[in-house]
Image 1 (spheres, each protein chain N blue to C red):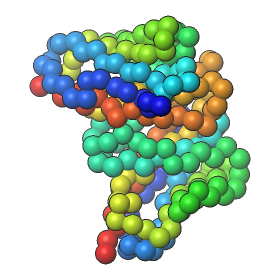
Image 2: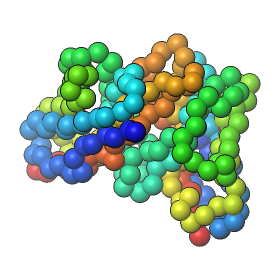
Image 3: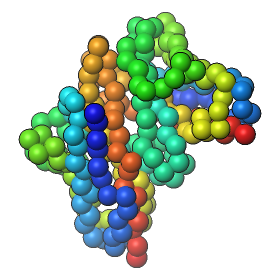
Length: 112
Length: 113
């Protein structure tokens, strides 16, 4: 089966740093994606990790530990526009095709 | 360079009707996947098309069917609509050449009354 867990909600202050965790138990693993989704909009690609370690991209960083089935998304210098849902998703390949299995998303609220 | 485009953006149907949603993938992408996202949930995988064939399918009934055309665009068809089919339907495009790229369109929001 596929199981991806992430916190439902988080609140942080503008200018601060927040870490959103994601744990997964999946049959197969070919990489982990993080997406940002504002209300009523489509998910926007943030990062893709396939090897262990930290990937940094501007204010956003993503970490992966395959042995622990664990990833986190780190957001620095938070801005009000970062208020959104953050989706963790594992990609698996089967039968010549691939699919993403998503967590339910973490709703981040950035406050003044 | 156009990204992933979907149409229509919003539509309202009644129970029992049929609906067709359309998707054009990002330039250079050859694979199209469809996802259903209910309110407050993460997207759920419906199926994926590559080379005009269904390559993988999620846990959705046969009422959900699809097609991919030679130009890589795709359609999602849902027959005998149920109230529970109300959701945001997302198309994602990717390339067999680059596994780290998977981009979503803006989605089609379907309301079934």
